[in-house]
Amino acid sequence: MIIKKLTVGPLEENTYIIGDEASKKAIVIDPGDEPDRIMEVIRKNGFEIAALVCTHGHFDHVGACGDIRKETGAKILMHKEDIETYQMAKDHAAFWGFDVDDLPEPDGFLSEGDEVKAGGLAFKVMHTPGHSPGGISLYGEGIVITGDTIFQGSVGRTDFPGGSVEKLSESFRRLLALPEDTKVFAGHGPETTIGREKRENFFVGEL
Image 1 (tube, rainbow, N blue to C red):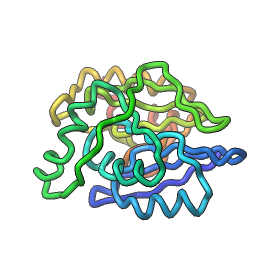
Image 2: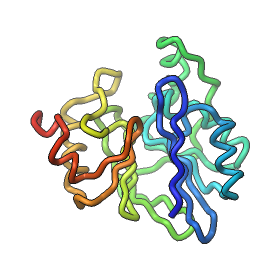
Image 3: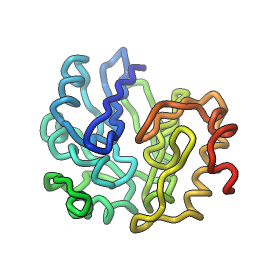
Image 4: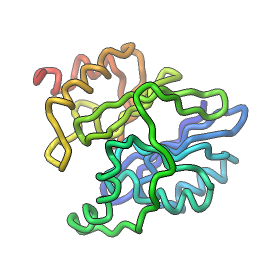
């Protein structure tokens, strides 16, 4: 498995390209900004993109979806409960003083228990709402990609439209139930592990 991380855009969002070393098939997770940089990594590694997966619809995670889809032909996939968040991304960005291109409609929706595959790699979809209604995490191959549900030492904010502290708490508990050696790749900040977050995440004390 090949994991390429790019920190993009003014909010320093983490875009991940995860590829199967044998087949070179890959998925792009949260292409938030700087599509030229993302495409450079894709071309340099010879990746064939199977899907563009959005962990949620906030502008800093989806801003480059249109450009990457145009270049690769890959489908944009997300949870249906975040479609409104996705459709509001341009306006949300403008409110914060940023500009995002018009976004194409998603090509399909992911639900709890679905699998996203790239060659011999497979990741199970976990519906982890709280930061947004349709937030998802992808779990498999010893890692979990959590979007803005959980960060190293922290969790996503819940004061945006559709946010819920109660649902975030439920999602947080689900993620902490994964094996402790599971590597966590979050939407912002450095990598961590489930075990470390059990011991050090401030939100444990809020449950």
